[in-house]
Image (cartoon, rainbow, N blue to C red):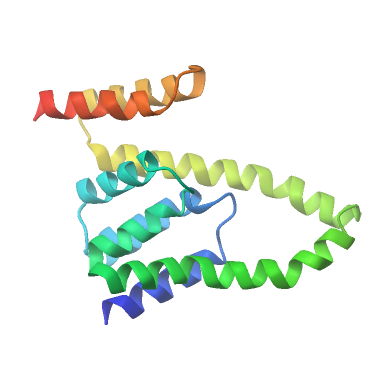
Length: 171
């Protein structure tokens, strides 16, 4: 049953998420596109863009992917899979971390996880750029969009609007 597979995939990923759901995109892509073949590169990228355009947390991408793969049961399974394990772990460990927040090993752990989260986000960007297309034009568009979001004070929604216009013109 696909819903159960989605639940187990996202439950496992839930415990590996350092820096949020977007840091898991390379592994989500590998599981959903490369291993199971439930979606192609273009659809995966479109679902990510849709989730980013919607208001709310970044974890929406998981719900949208689950819905696209297996309908309502996929949405529920993927969402519960990504939320339950890490939520239960956070609840169990949260009290101890508050008491130990100034302990040297806790400070070192938090400091050490920062470059891991940044690296995972960078890997997510590479996977999405690669899935968007291999042409020099697509690479240039991806680099321009990245620089715009990084350096501009304007909303990232302008990048999505620009991408929609370019997509319509290049199709």
